[in-house]
Image (cartoon, rainbow, N blue to C red; front, side, top):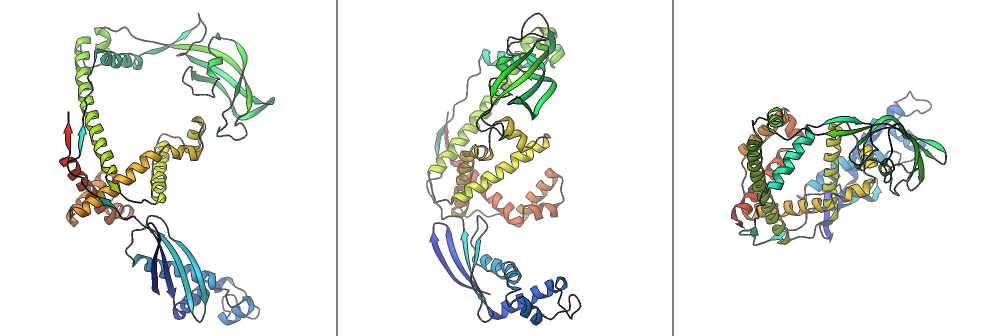
Length: 427
């Protein structure tokens, strides 16, 4: 195997020519034959005992070429790509340009790598920090939220349903007079005004009274998850079984004693104000840090391959899906209730993904310029910390994350400190 040539074909893309000589190809063919012969039957020979030449005469000289070439991708092409020392950001595109027993195999490999990065003036970035003033209205809103959490649902039977109520309903959906799958339920508790259901559904329950049976008409969104209903007019037969509303506790010292660790309403308000002020400072610090990194992005000069952004979105979608699964949900259900398809959902991560990729590239370059050094001991300590955090053996962490990635993350973290510590924050 030899790396014949490396040519830059566009930004962050290179074309590699990799050649496996006739001897290496012959070895791969023989290995392919050895793996496959047990599956091949030839008259006059026991299964698995037919000579390679006999099989090639019957099925063609190239009968084992495909398996041999696929094996060479792993045994020869991948190591040749590794020898280039480029940091790939996606899987390479591999094509065979020539193949023969006498000359061997030539591969054309297109790789996409991290782009060249330039950055300067990353120290002394100046930003403004504004701490929000906490008002009495903010405290009142917190107290109202506490009352909401401690409210109790009571049945209403002396008025019609209104926004904010819980309507307990039986419903069944029909399209062109035929009931459709997933459109039926009994004693479903629907919060009116929550926009949980199809647009127009909840609004047509408002004003109805307990015991009423009625029909409502809606049109499903054009991008509804269930394609057979997308953009289609449908009707729902509804029975309103019960109306519930939330009854809030009286706001007095007795409520405070029951619901909190404090004895009086004044004590509670004072504590809430203190906590809101501390939260305001934390939020201001976070916003200032965000401004620092936004300014850092502006100082970055790099022609970034779009696949890097797509990879980051892939990662974010996987994380989101994992979070859903921990809550007993799945992506399909989430998309259905949010009336989104996967392309639209991925687009919601686009801006955040681009920012994260750019900040990472900037910090990696700063770590290089600042000659940031991370010792093996620091890497081992970080892996140990991760092991304790995720309750996984150290070796398992190493196999999943890799020491190289951990070291890179630590270098980026140090570069981040350099940028933040040198920044000038006004306010």
